[in-house]
Image 1 (cartoon, rainbow, N blue to C red):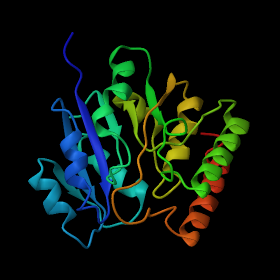
Image 2 (cartoon, rainbow, N blue to C red):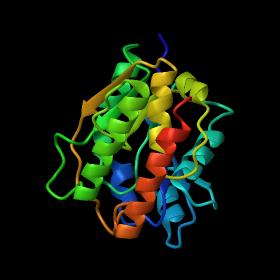
Image 3 (cartoon, rainbow, N blue to C red):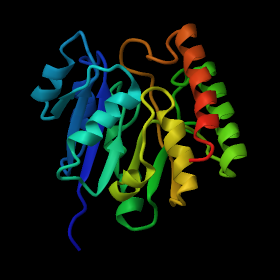
Image 4 (cartoon, rainbow, N blue to C red):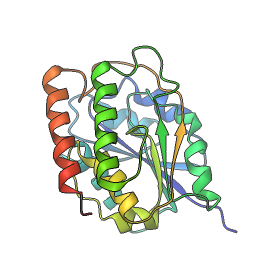
Length: 228
């Protein structure tokens, strides 16, 4: 059987300090696309210097960045797509825990579960409450109980295409997780370590305003994607 190809999509906004460490931890068998989502630092240059393909997406938004990355690989798509944040909080070197169940034909969609092994302070109270609330809402909507909404995740390319993702901002993870159940994907969650981000504040949980906006978008997303 031919080796299955893996592409890692890394949305990045002003992450020049942490990107070298993230990229340096990824195994050699993956290809990497960094989506520069309007950075004002040298994120794009750092990504190129560390061997990544760089895609620019001027429309701000987590979903916008990932969709741009997906479009960039459609001509010659991989077998598996991994989404990884650029803040060094997730262990990029543990990517195999997400990709191997897909390679082995045991899963279509594998997510990291940060709730068991997160460093002290890596997940704020706001994040913990928001994750639990969102997972509870998704269970009511889909009948499936997720433990987390970890951004470190892997999905089979054919499954990703079937989901027809569209959310441009913070509703992306909710949309993906709900549609995965609605489309009958085989879903796994794998407990993995989670560190405090390397530098700066989270774009979502780093401020009260950002956390409230993200929370409202997540609630909206659960209702909007209720019917797939």
